[in-house]
Image (cartoon, rainbow, N blue to C red; front, side, top):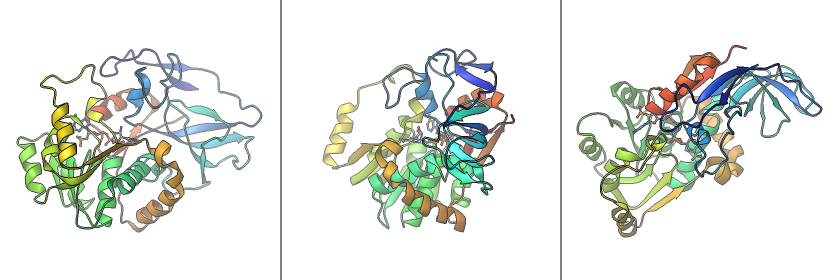
Length: 336
Ligand code: NDP
């Protein structure tokens, strides 16, 4: 069993010293356990937080511990009720070829799911994050303007498409012309603005003539700076992620603008609410699965995935994800 363990906590961007590939004997399932062969490993921005021991909503990975991660796996042998050999499952199997599980939190996808890896994206945690954050905190109404960044990624792409279905005018923000073209032409957003292009704040302003009613926050940093002056009275801001900051080692330089932000929140009577998807909205999972399943099935919601071949590629693929190199949901296909 090949597995990546956390060797050292990174400062800034993870590097060659952060993770170590180890090989151990195949784990043997005990009573009430099953052995899972990981087929797909999800790469997600939150993993950067687990590498760090800064205070967070979840404990960090221990030094020497297997790096955590969502997986789609096949059951190899099982002593767990409801799971038999050959079942495909969604589990939290980590960055390794095989994992043991007692079935807690494991979802059974059956013997022949159509697109098993999609359970790590639009039909799983990122899709649920998008749907729940937008509907519960964003409270979209037809005719309103919704803006979302990281718009070609699994969360952002789903936020915008759900917003479009609910009748919003949807403007995405993404890095580069290729991603922006995909967001408009394939995902059906009304517009998409390149945050890396010259004059980004002005281009964003021109794309939201009626201001912004909902800003779904995925990235923070310079993108939020451009969004803030365009927010309308009573705007709602689901604070989902701040990926531009995850490798930061210090606060950004410059004047302290906290009082400016607080003044805006007060005068515009805005709602900012952070959330952690399953802690806050886990009870809505059945409704999500029904609703999103139907939208994906009918083609109303589209999904782009980027497959990386081989467990050994996972560390560099993860660093690239935080740099904005992923185009669509990044998953690693394992080949044990
Ligand atoms: P993505 O696959 O979209 O990856 C991150 C994207 O962020 C990059 O591709 C890049 O897109 C963009 N990005 C990176 N750095 C910057 C930067 N400096 N400025 C602007 N954009 C940047 O991620 P996900 O869809 O998986 O996740 C989106 C967000 O949702 C993350 O912040 C994540 O942590 C959060 N999240 C939160 C959850 C919760 O429960 N609160 C659950 C799941 C996810 P581009 O090239 O287009 O700029």
